[in-house]
Length: 611
Image 1 (cartoon, rainbow, N blue to C red):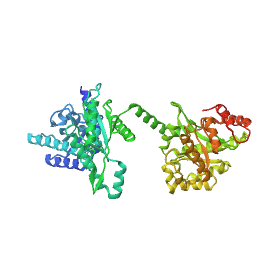
Image 2: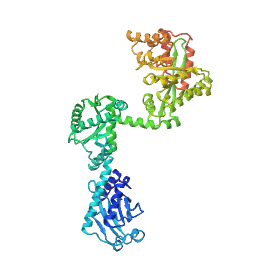
Image 3: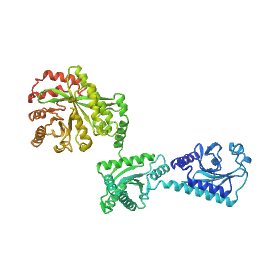
Image 4: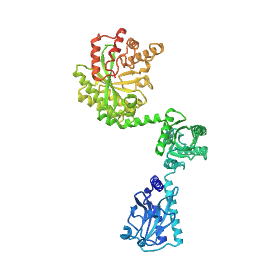
């Protein structure tokens, strides 16, 4: 039991970060006052840690601590009251202590334990003199008062960093401490039947806009109002913590899942009324994350609740419970993000190439370079999983430049085999952030001796393309140097023809979603025909993505689409398999525009070596 108690005592010292209080002016004032009151030369506030004792404050000595082996305070914290040794040289326990036998040659010691938390003695305030003496009862009582003063000051200093200055509520640091305490006091084998709830109550974007327009005061007023509402609604049920600008937390102890759901539903109703500040009325939001105390790791409980809250934010749900599978995906994505540089160095990345079929000549004259990742642990990772992960890091430009260099080197390798192709490479919004992309691509093409017209750069349509001051300027610079620019996935989301006027593009790649059903729906067929016709009239080349049937290909030929890409033409292929496909196709092709009868041949040809 004593070892367990000692472990808890050390844990308390660490969790409160008491060592950070060393040299604090308030503690220095207390030891100076004690030295004057007791007429002694040396006073210490000693913190007895696992191996050493540390002096948080001291007067009358240059020392800042000693080992516990020679510490008299180690014995003092084992007492329930003042520990006094009138003459250390006459006490067999201390007579041979180096601090007694050598400098500073201590003779008198009196220490009062500093009791924190649930009775844990973390150290002492002690009096040291260099001649024997005894305290009378009045002095002993006075020393107890000084110990209480130190404990109070430590508690005050700790709490000063644990209150949110805006709402006055306990903050995230206090929540972390309280979680540790709750889990520490529960039986190790029996998880506490409690739930941590974190709630987002105000749209962060709206709050930021309001701050920019009117300053921080209105936002602080709104947050205070919501904090008061939440505190009032919960009453004695739970303590409320302010853990983020617009986020609050509380623990529902001993509550079932149904009870938690009922409490959250009630809170959502109570917090739904708009808030008013500076004459503005703002609507509140309510997105909560809930994590049960299924682990004794307080930091992990907090992390799980935050994960659940973000799931609620992303889905628009009022609240979400912690989901182990979703968490596993997030952990996997984080791990992937940290391994991108290694993957580049160890050749885990590779490129495959999906050919595009010219519907006017019947040739496979161009390819799209597609990135693949073969992970040593996870195996082949789908691009729609790892590409967004990389885009969320600062490494996307590095990966894109690797792809560009690999793709252009591959063009040269194919040329040596007698096959001349054009190639397209995908770019992301992250590639345009530093403004150096056009120069890099131009320098690379010049270095390798590749004509700019043979490289097409694909950008996925979306809101980020509307940043005319940056993205459009860089795309314009690339086009001015002879590179082709394609708008990928046209029709999948934000796109319309009006914004194409703002972007320098040569090609429109029609999203695969627009092709679905064109063989059976006249309405869908009319839509594709209209898009193709307008694109041609505006001077764009057209590429249809996701072509999967002979019927689709025949209709695109009829409607004069320029190129087709998709599994009916070919799956993405390794470089060697692509060459074999092209040679096989060229030997079978007539070199004239495709007819409906010829389109059926492509599907079987394009399967060889597919990835």
